[in-house]
Image (cartoon, rainbow, N blue to C red; front, side, top):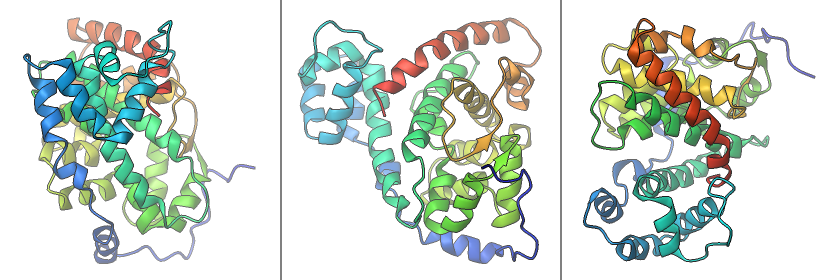
Length: 308
């Protein structure tokens, strides 16, 4: 049976900022946020790279190899015969998806190590699927804007937007379980409950955690303001793209598992603050974005089936 939309929090003492920071700072750091696979990254960015060179580096990482083969053999590619060879997999996937896999795999593996403090089982696989789905769609959304991006920031802001949820599992496990079991109308109501129980919401928690890693400002601001992009003092397009991507992925049925909120109605993202920040009035950019998003939404479930 679902909890009431307004759970009992009367008499609860919210933690002060100093204690919240202390708990977040005690979380293990993620080496993958500071140094991705430099050799692989350089190869997939180069026009001169050979499939054999890329495959050789991927073979050194068993987890990345397994994820790559799982994806290429998924329903998304619909190949007649099973692929068991890394070089063949690289050929079928293409450099863009190899690059995305190489970014996501070590980050997710390290985030999984922060789960240990929660005694109640939580739907981690759903969270990873939602995070990767947001990464894919955030990149797609930003392609329809004038923003020029020459690295993986557009992918990482989507991948990491809910990192605060993972940190909560380590630093505030009891509160996270209560929040995850509470039925609420919207993500904004979830943030409100987080602030009632802890003092900060998952966006602020995640941004503080990432700032401790000295990640670039674009990523930290996107995570901090993805629920309210119009309040971002800088880098609004990144925060806005994540908000829209989050709604789109929820609409596709990939909810993330950590929040019990009402289903997202079709085209409701057109009324988001983020959509207005990105595209303004319903002009050419908005029309192009809607077409691109529609195509990405149709492909998303099949893509995720091979990634998580």
